[in-house]
Amino acid sequence: MSKKHNLGTICVQSGWQPKTGEPRVLPIFQSTTFKYETSEQMADLFDLKASGYFYTRLQNPTNDAVAAKIAELEGGVGAMLTSSGQAANFYAVFNICQAGDHFITTNSIYGGTYNLFGVTMKKLGIDCTFVDPDWDDAKIEAAFRPNTKCFFGETISNPGCNVFDIERFAKLAHKHGVPLIVDNTFATPINCRPFEWGADIVTHSTTKYMDGHATAVGGVIVDSGNFDWDAHAEKFPGLCTPDESYHGLTYTKAFGKAAFMTKATAQLMRDLGSIQSPQNAFLLNLGLETLHLRMPRHCQNAQKVAEWLEQRPEVAWVNYPGLKSNKNYALAQKYLPNGSCGVIAFGLKGTREDAIKFMDSLKFICIVTHVADARTCVLHPASHTHRQLSDEQLLEAGVRPDLIRLSVGIEDVEDIIDDIKQALEK
Ligand SMILES: *Cc1c(COP(=O)(O)O)cnc(C)c1O
Image 1 (cartoon, rainbow, N blue to C red):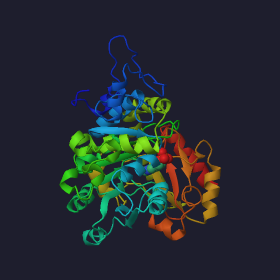
Image 2: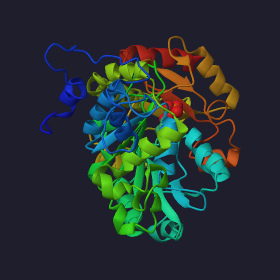
Image 3: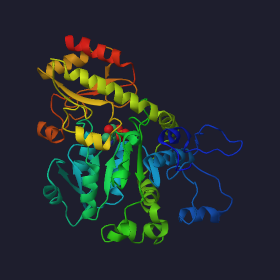
Image 4: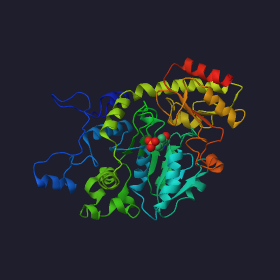
């Protein structure tokens, strides 16, 4: 597709480009394997001398068409679909970190990522420091070590709704010779494109707004192609020195700007195998075709609900980056001028039981362990997604124990407000 197209056209038209007589709609290539004429053709694929499909664990044409669309939406040079958002964040970091390495993340991140980084990756010998984005530069910089390999943050944190100062953290990461990885799940490229602010790698849980209908768990990693790995070759031996599992090929020399994605595919996918099924990639693509229509509606609805909640006597506090009273308002104006997302965090006056009674009294808004799809839903992170965290860790992750996460859908906003109103009155 031509780079001249706007985001809405990319959502609808990019990715699958049929030739004459081929299906207009992206086909599901439901095949684990692909046919070749000679043994040599196959051998060249295994040696990364030629590119082509041979086994769906590494690449599949349905997945690649959808990944190409997302890469174009983010303004990157390449992308890879993964089986989940968890796999995307794990691969993005693990592609450049090995045992003995260290990385830095902000503490206001999704609970699953918090566990992955703080518990599971520690078991692999990869250490991580959680920093508070409100700290000054000197205090953040003190967290960098000689073995630090990347910095991680979420454009809009789930569920704390904090807005990440991408430009500031990109500068700090680059000053220390490491890339900035941004999880852009909640903003989506419709509302923010982190590469434009200096981020190097973007990840998504496509399970959320990109799919948008709660049909398929998935993830994606996108590379901007901008980080100069060879300029810091001593930090990134996996990319800048020969890979013995590919006959001594060096990714940066052989693939240039595609080095990061090629290594993630040829090494991590080959060995760990968290692929997205082509069936799920097809569903994801259907979601992407309306992403540019759904995101503005989520934001308009959420803005109205947040403003309405702020006026209610039963409500103790409301955290939505689009509210003028919000501590993230200035950052949201800078990074998310067209709207942030549909997720609002708020707390009720009263006890934890009152919060649970409120949620149980909602009618069409239901309690689900999900956010960011067409249907409005609620969750109490302290008793659901984040229940494995202590109260202290909850507060560190920006999750107050009374926090209710409301994911505003794309229904008519009057009906959403009516449902909340009758539940508050109970
Ligand atoms: C949900 C979520 C994830 C994890 O994604 P899954 O698809 O559930 O594995 C990661 N990051 C953010 C910001 C999320 O909201």
